[in-house]
Amino acid sequence: SMQYPEWIWHNGAIKHWAEATTHVMSHALHYGSSVFEGIRTYQTPNGPVIFRLTDHNTRLFASAKIYDMAMPYTVEQVNQACRDVIHANNNTTDYLRPVAYRGLGGFGLSADTPTDLAVATWKMGQYLGASVLEQGIDACVSSWQRFAPNTLPAGAKAGGNYLSGQLVAREARRLGFGEGIALASTGLLSEGAGENLFLVFEGALHTTPVSAALLNGITRNTIITLARDAGVEVVERDLPREYLYLCDELFMCGTAAEITPIRSVDGRQVGTGKPGPVTRRVQELFFGLFEGKTPDKRGWLEAL
Ligand code: PMP
Image 1 (cartoon, rainbow, N blue to C red):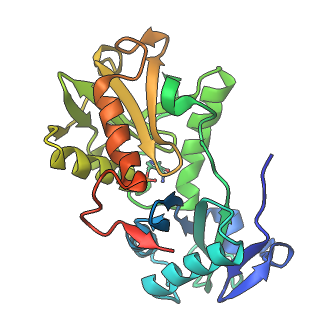
Image 2: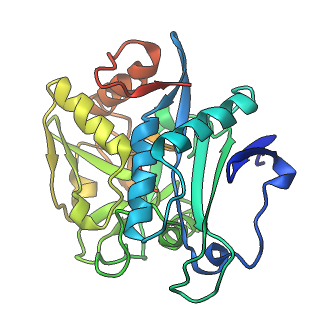
């Protein structure tokens, strides 16, 4: 069951959990007019860090810009709110959730309601369940498509966009799968309900392009960068559905999912059905950042 934090940052102050509430007449509750981030903290040999904090909050502001939502703070102020809420909860949580939303001030779709901002935190652990990082999950292709690029902007991490992800994830769960994968309106592969996709062919990583109506994930970018540093070829390309069945290895990635191998899709075994060598290598490179084994060349491990 959900473990709520004791303290939450809300509109400039740290509040007790019970005080960090918003009104039922808030614009965002009715129309999905919020933008948010999901950010992990890690314990490293050199102390606790927030992974790519500034990149996440920069994307928060980009999402707000896309939806023309005024942000009454700077990125650095939201960074500080994130640090403050972790400290307030004595560093007992591992996941941060900044959320900016249209609050009270009108019900017109174009209403200029003030933007409220909260930073919540909780203990995420393994998002897709225990031991999935080692064993992988069984996935399915969803009957729900991703929204077309001229309908909703997939590049924004916005509340309303996640109605799509809920349909994909809930259908997958109802059918007994660990996660669902959506096709874009082009019919080509897009992404998981809340994760980007990587396929492995002959030792090279292939990932779907942002034109396939997906969120430009920070974990995706981390993997592309670390893999290229390590001399692994990475290709961004359009791929049809059947390549999910034919690739040597397949995994999902995201802040919550981290690097989750996929052992089957639609009942077809992927590769050997076990996490393959490239997936393992990517996991090593990624988790190595937090074990002090992969050098942090780009200042991604931000002090808590
Ligand atoms: N796609 C979607 C739809 C997501 O919700 C997420 C999680 N934020 C991702 C991809 C992965 O993004 P990131 O690596 O930045 O968490």
